[in-house]
Length: 310
Length: 222
Image (cartoon, rainbow over all chains, first blue to last red; front, side, top):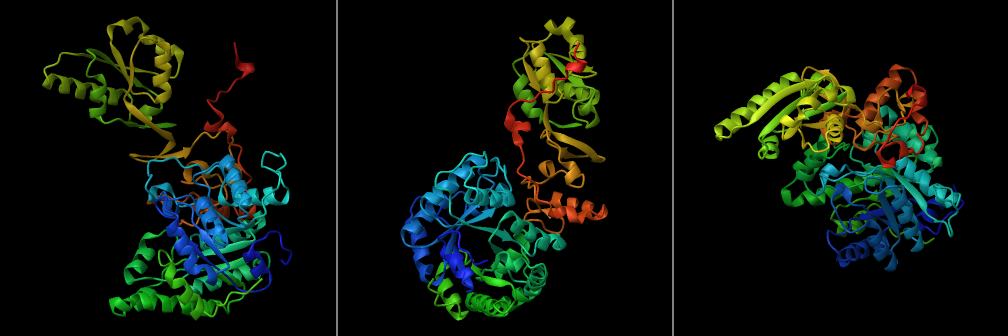
C-alpha cells in the first residue's frame, strides 16, 4: 500500500506510515457558506482532511459537494461523503465527476440514515446502489476510466476511496467479514463509527488484523467527544448501532454539570492515546458534532499535532 | 398474496357523497384472506354507509356484491347486466381489481375502498407482513431465502447496514433486520462463506424503474 493513485494528502500521509487525522464538518441548513468555511478554518491546520457530511440524519442541508468546494477553495482538503439514499447511479456518477472537476481527492461511500430520521419522512429513498457498490463504482471509474455503462470517461476521477465500518452493529460475527467485503470492493480507507466500547473495538480490530485487513486498507478509528451525560444517554439509547458502555455515562454523571464537557474531552483524548497503540489503527476520524472548536485541543493533547508535511 | 387495508370510512364517505346509487363490490381472493375486501367487509362497509346517510337524511341505494375475482374479465362480466343501476362502484379489491373494473366499465366512476399495501403473508392472526416487491429478478437463492429488496428499509444488497441493532432495523424496533435474518439463515444452512460474496449492482430495469411490466407467453395464447 505505497503507490499513490491520487493527489490526496490523506492518502500520502497514510501511505507514508503516519497516523492520519480527519475530522468532519456538517454543511449548514441554509445557503450561507460562511458557516462551513468557519468550521473548516477552525480545524484546517490540525487535520489531513475534512469529511463533509451528506444530509446527515436525513436532514436537508447544503449539498456536500458544494460545501466541499467551499473548503477546497480555502485550501482545506475535503472528503466528500456520498450516501446512496438520495441519488441513483446517474446522479452518483455525475457528482463524482463534478467532485473530480474540482480535484476533490477523497470520497466516503455510505448508505445514509433512513429518511424517516430526517425532515422528509414522506420522501422516497433511492438505494439504486448500496454503499459497497458505490465503492466499486468509484474505483471502476478511476481505475478503468469508464462509466458503469461502459463508455470511456474523459479525464477519469482521481479519488481516494473510503467506506465506513461499524464495529458495534449487530450481528457482531459478520462485522469483520463485512469490513473484508468493503475492502474487497475497493475501499482504501475505513472510518469507523464512534468508538466508546474500547474492548469491543479492540476485539474487532484483532479479528481484522488476523485476516490482514489492516494491510489492505487504512482503518481510522472514529471518535466523538461527549458534551454531556445527556448526550451520552441519547447516543446509547437513541442512535442506531451505537455502543456506549455504562461506565462512560457514570463517569460523565460523576462530575458537576459544568465540568461534563471537559470530562468528555478527557475521555476522548484518553481513548485516542489508548487506541494509538492498537495494532491496525491507521489514524483517527474525530467527529466533534457542532463542536469543531474543540478538535484542535483534542488533537494536540492526543499527540497528533503538528500534522506531517507530505 | 396481495395485502390490503381498509380505507378510513370518512375517506370513502367523502368520495361517494355525491352519488345516489352505489354498488359495493368485494373480491373473493387475496383481500378476502387478509380481511379487507371480502363479502364480510362489503357487508360492514355497506351497513356503515347506510347508517351514515340515513343519519344525514339522505336516501341512497347501496347494493352489495362480491365477485370471485376482480382481476379477471370473466368474473367482472357478471355485473354488466346491472351496471346501469349504479352511479358509482366502491371496489374493495386491490389496486389491480379496481383498475380492471375501471377499464372494463369506461363510464362508471370507480372508488377504491382499500389501500393496497404489499405482497405479503399472513404471519399471525391479524398480522400481515411484506415479503416481496416484485422486482422482477429474484435473488432469493443468494440471500438465504430472505429478500433484502422487500425487507430491508434501504434494500441493501450487501448488508446489514450500520443501523442493525439486536436483530432489529434502525427504522423501528418492531421491524426485523432483513440482513440479521439472512445471516441467521446462512448459518443454519452452513453457508456463511457465501456471506462474503459481493452482490453485484442490481439490474432494476425489471423493477418499477423499467416502466409498467408485462409477461407475454406465446405458448399459452389462444
